[in-house]
Image (tube, rainbow, N blue to C red; front, side):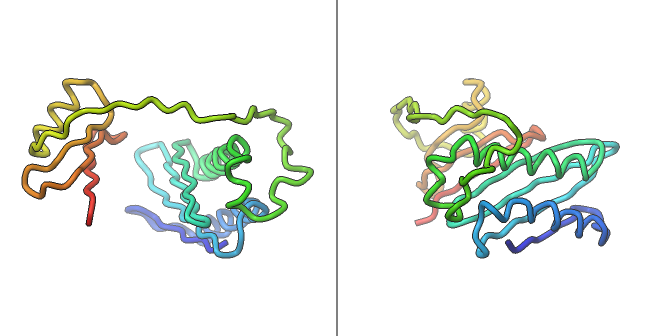
Length: 175
């Protein structure tokens, strides 16, 4: 696994880099050598934030954790990634390293029920051309976390969404 460590508005000391790399090596049993992991560390007042993103065979695993220390946040982030893998092991079996789910897989003693099928609720609606500001207003009026619309300038389908820090994000499609 190739590991990248990024510090946002801070320097990551060498001891922390070694700790992150050694703890992430625990996940090598699930991923092949072409896998990449990115750990992004940031600090706000007393809270330490760690974002862990792992990309393997086109599949993205992500966890975002805030804690009092980076070590605790790292442990929780790795736990969340492992939990995602265990919960979806049937669907992921072809994408992960062969033998990833052999004996010793359930080391934590937790029992996860596998989901048999996805429940998909379909909704259709007309795409009305509108500005980004109008889409944000519409999303807030509906009390949704995201809103799909057609940009009135580019005529492309876009998605506006509310971020954790109460700002907004925009996803634009590219042809």
